[in-house]
Image (cartoon, rainbow, N blue to C red; front, side, top):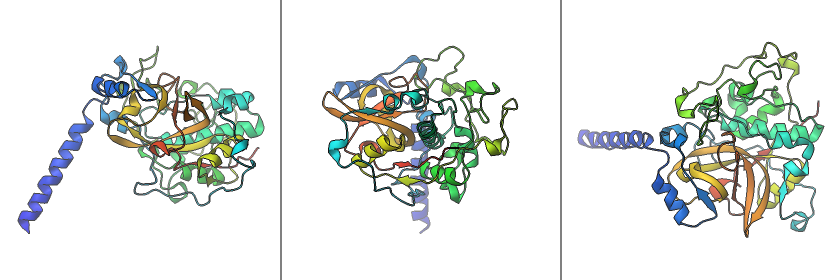
Length: 354
């Protein structure tokens, strides 16, 4: 028995050492980029100077969403099944919320930056709420606060989400119904008086050459979750935290391609999650589908439309890695086959107007 235990410990130690060594390896290599492009699939891969020094660990830090197949996942309590459309014939070939609701395009098309924090679950949920609030009310000036969600949405009411250490969009949507979320702009809006809780973690260049005043993400510290407070962090903001909140009336999951499309046409943006593999980091354009590379973790984004590109159906999504990644911060992903789980963890809700 002692020998068996020693053997098990030896194997475990070897596995852990291998995992640590793997995490220190480059997140992108020219071999991976070549493998994608040589496959002549529906998208293009690339590598750049800014990403040469990033490691697998740098990327894993960004993955903060629990997927349905992972331990700790909590499914939404109810599923929406009644929609305004009559059938598939009512669904157009392409749809984009930015053009469907042009008065809200500055909100639905806005690309945010989660920085070095696994708060994508808070961004994918808060941004969808933000879009739906604009569509419901016409308020195209108010940005809602992913920091308020990341910092204060925790415990059983929030699917045991843990700020920068990951969470669940479905938990956030439940939290929106009871606690609401305050206004909050980007890092660039800190102390400018425009919102209650702007994002306090420094924006950085994700997988792109840094613009002026924007450091590479790997140069930033690994951020701890901001503290939850019951007051606005911007002292010059005229509103009060308690009266600044925007609420959801309910929350629910949406299942199936056609129901996802009807829901977007009827209410607006969806919160979705996908499995991220190493090749996703190399995405520069086209309709993404996993081609090569290991699984890195779950990631939440918002979905704002769909279309067809040279016969390939796709979903249109907005990432939270700033404008320098992908197609100016957005990406398209294969539609209709649950690519990387994109159709398997969809959540949304009805937004109350103030």
